[in-house]
Length: 240
Length: 289
Ligand SMILES: Nc1ncnc2c1ncn2[C@@H]1O[C@H](COP(=O)(O)OP(=O)(O)OP(=O)(O)O)[C@@H](O)[C@H]1O
Ligand SMILES: [Mg+2]
Image 1: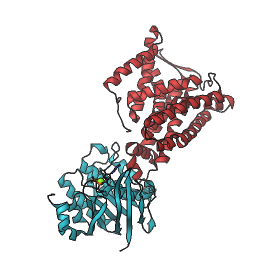
Image 2 (image 1 turned 90 degrees about the vertical axis):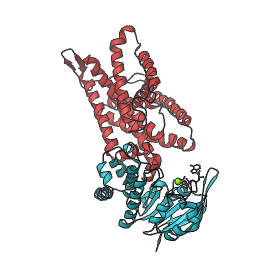
Image 3 (image 1 turned 90 degrees about the horizontal axis):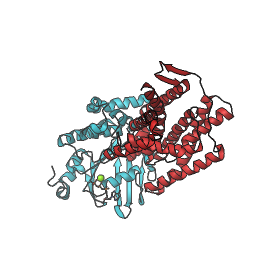
Image 4 (image 1 turned 180 degrees about the vertical axis):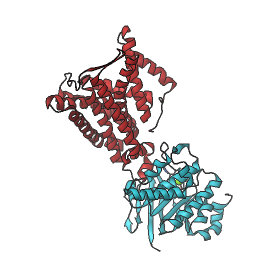
C-alpha cells in the first residue's frame, strides 16, 4: 500500500511547551488510522502540524510524495487535505447551506460542487431538513455532521477528524461512527481519526497509534490493540 | 412629521453606508478605523476634482472615488495594518495606527485639495413637493436612492458571492476559514479596501449636496462610531440600524430641538450613554451576521 501521508520525527512547541517530541506516523491510501491518547497528549497538535496551522520545529511531513510542512493552511486544503477541527468550529451565524458552500471554497466548477453538495445532503439527510437553518441553533450532533459534510465538500483525499464524538449524545456517537465508516467505504479518502473515545476509534479503524505526552507509546493493528492489555488499562478501562 | 422621516431616511442611508464600511473592517481585522471619516472626505474631494476640475460627468466622479479609495484602503491595509497586526497582539497598536492614519490623511487632503469647502453643482434640479407635507429637492432623492441601492448591493454581495461568504467566514471563525482555504491576508485586504470604498462612495454622494471640507473627517469618524455602538459592532444589521437611527435622531433633532439652540448632538450623546449603560453590546451585539 502506498503512503499518502507520513509524519517523520516531528517536534512542535508552543512557546515553552514541548508538545510533540519526535512523532512519526503514517497513513496509507484508503486507510482509516486512529490516533488515541489522553488529554494534552498532543493529538490535536499533530493535526495542526499537518494542516499548517502551527509550524513544526524539526522533522518533516510528506504528502503524496512531496514535502508538506511549511505549506500554509489555506494551501494545504488545496492539496486535498480537509480537517474537521476540535470543537467543530462551525460558522455560527451562517446557514447550513453557507457552511457547506464554504467547504467548497477552493473549488470552482459549479456543476461539480452541486454534485458533491447533493452527495453530502444524501449522506446526512438531517442537513437537508435543516438546510437554511442558522448553524448555532442546531444541536451538537447536527453541527458535527455539518462540519464533516463541510470537510467533504472540498473532495479531500485525506480527511482529518479531531474528536468528532466530543460533547455529543452517546446515541449520536454511533451515528457519527457509522458515517465515518461509510465515508471511508464510499469516497476515495484516507482518514486520520483523533479520538479520546478509544473504543469507538479502534473499532472503526484499520490501524492505530497511542500517543502519550508528545510521543508515540504504542502502535499497531486496531484489532490487536483492542485486546492489548496496556491499551485496555490505559485507554479502555472504565470507559463506556 | 413626514418631512422629518424623509430627511431621516435620506441621511440614514448615507450614514448606514459609512457604518457598514467601518463595521466590515472591524469584524474582519478587529481594527477600529479612526481614519474612516477622512476616507469619506477624501472620496468627496476625488468626485469634486473629477466633476468640477476635469468637467466629467458625476457618475465618473463617483466611480473614481470608489476606485481611488479602494486602492488606498488596500494599500493602507497591506503596508500599515497587516504588519502591525502580525507583530503586535495588542489592540491598542492598531488603534494608535488608525489615529495616525487619520492625521496623515488630513495632511494629505490639505496638501492636495486645500482647506476650502468644496462642492459639486446640483446634479439634477427641481424640488419634489407633496402637498407641502414633504418637500425634498430631487438631487437629495436621487442621492438617497443611490445610497439605498448601494446598501442593497453590498448586502447581496456579502450574502451571495463567494468573496462575501469568505469574508463572513473570516469574521466568524478565522481558523475555520483558513481550513476552508481562505487566505487571511488577502481577504483582510479585500475587506479593508471594500470598507474604504464605501466611505469614499458616500463622500462622492454627499459632496453634491453638502460639499466637503478638511474639518469634516474627525467628526464623521465619531458619528460612524456612534452608529456602530448603537447597532452593535461587527454586525451588518447593526450598522444599518445604527445608521438609520442616527439619521432619524439628527433629523428629529434639527426640527424639534432647533428652537433650543444647537443641542441635537448633546441630546444624542446623553441618550446614547443611557442606552449603552443598559445595553453595552448595542442593539444587535457581536459578531458579524
Ligand atoms: N495554543 C497553545 N498554547 C500553549 N500550549 C498549548 C496550546 N495548544 C496546546 N497546548 C499544549 O500542548 C500540549 C498538547 O496539546 P494538544 O491540544 O495537542 O493535546 P490533545 O491531545 O489534542 O488534547 P485534548 O484531548 O485535550 O484535545 C498540551 O500540553 C497543551 O496544553
Ligand atoms: Mg485535542
